[in-house]
Length: 401
Ligand SMILES: *Cc1c(COP(=O)(O)O)cnc(C)c1O
Image (cartoon, rainbow, N blue to C red; front, top):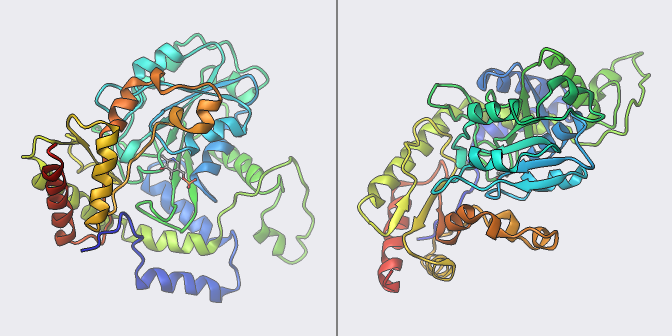
């Protein structure tokens, strides 16, 4: 049997929705994008949403909107995709990795407290696999961290604490144990609709936010529109209207808008997202049932039922990095694609060259060295899941783990 890792779930409704936009005569940012933004804001209980070309763009533009750059430090998790830290480099600031809590995939509030300095301007917390970070504790820390003002950043001076960003690339649909939605827990939250994510627009992302007392959600939206479309005072659709030709360039903005083709796919996917989540959560429970009795396999103990169930990570008790790599190879021989989410960022050549070392994040390394992420996708069959589970057990038997 061949089990892929995470193929996209595209149905005929999706195809029809995209075809409809292609036939409509309007294919770039326009009415579909606006509709998707409203639907997402309602879905994640945020005042507004700005759709963009990726979660990477969403994170980077948030930092830029708040004037974060050279000389500033931004804290993030070592257990993430490169995007979470690369955007900090893009704006010229310095990434500071705060380790995970022991035995957890999430950034530790205690480690954040240790790493906060007078130059800290933001924290990018990562909702690994859709598990939600402890935002209320992180907020409390940021309020009392001895923030020395935001330098030349007007918004940070008003905020008078570092900005709290959520990398919620995995977390659309997750809820906290108090019932709050991912997308409403941090100052701004970035979602990804990349092809491997739970809800896809092929490539794409969104930023959700609510207003501050010194800055309305509408003004944040306007700021993001300028930053994502060359600093143009008007979007393409309003420029198209008869007689409405004049525009001005206000700032050297980037090019990171979403197209209506993407938004149509996203809207179609969002319509059935509750069903998608139900399927993913059920698959996680099924994995739990298959793997629970095997002491060699440590699964994540929290219930998946209020999470987006984006990943199903397991750790192989007592295995080291080398054994784990062999396990992955043997799974491949049996036709099962598994993965590792993630190689801690300080281990990557780029960050090593910049002087980082994973020795400063021992908890992240401990999670990584025996980590295997199992296939999980909404069209996965029970047979595929059972085959994956029995294959993992046989591989461990054959290696005498
Ligand atoms: C996928 C991913 C991103 C980047 O998303 P893009 O939309 O591809 O930019 C960021 N953070 C995490 C944790 C991710 O898995």
